[in-house]
Length: 172
Image 1 (tube, rainbow, N blue to C red):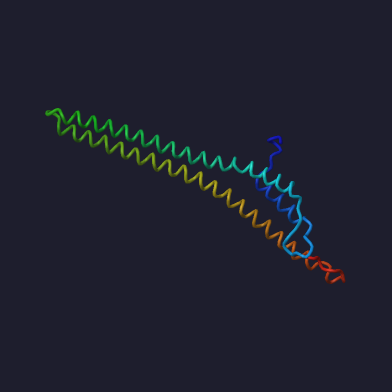
Image 2: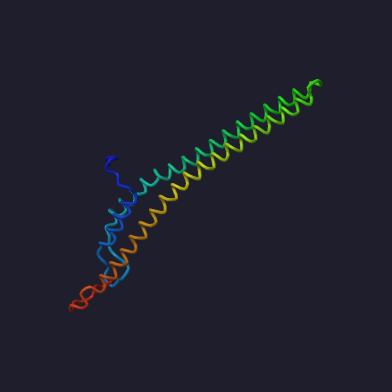
């Protein structure tokens, strides 16, 4: 299939719902219908092949978040380690002991503040990405619900059509 011909997964779901809605009813059943198994399986397999793209995007965002957090932690640990090393070096020199303690504490505090800032930025980034993915899933669920409602409404209309005109009601 040409990538430009690729249908949106929501459109593909609508197409499958339409096929089920148009399917011939099984005699003596209100809820069962007959569909071409191979065609339906093929359409569902195509849909399954498309959905991982969107799921991979979400997973990639989570991996990116984890990578950014890990990088931030590593950088914070490096800065803290450097600060502690500098602090220890300065403390060992008697003439500047007090000054060294203050400088080391400042470096450690600065590193912790930077690490916290990085964590907050990553959390905001991930929250935005997950919110976007949540909106996509909400639209998908709404589309499915509309399709089901339409299917139920058509079934009810079909079961009463012709009853007033002297025709036999549909068998579902």
